[in-house]
Image (cartoon, rainbow, N blue to C red):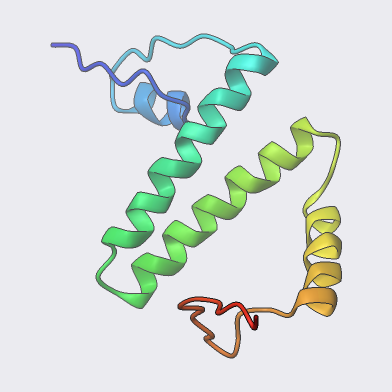
Length: 110
């Protein structure tokens, strides 16, 4: 029996599949396809975050998102530290999200 996945997987998944006496059929992506698949995977993990029912599951899925963000940064010759630095700069300039402010609308003062 065969099951089709057609998706990016973590590096050790083929080895794990082989240990279960199955044969993984894989290929190595070029950078352009890799970036597209990382972006798809980020959306997949985001949806999994929304579907979680426990704090433990949510942290697991957020960790998966972080792993993908790191891989996307590496493709752009950056690191997670580079992203964190930019995030801090934006936080200092525009603030964070701690105050839970929800902007409903802006009225023109004229």
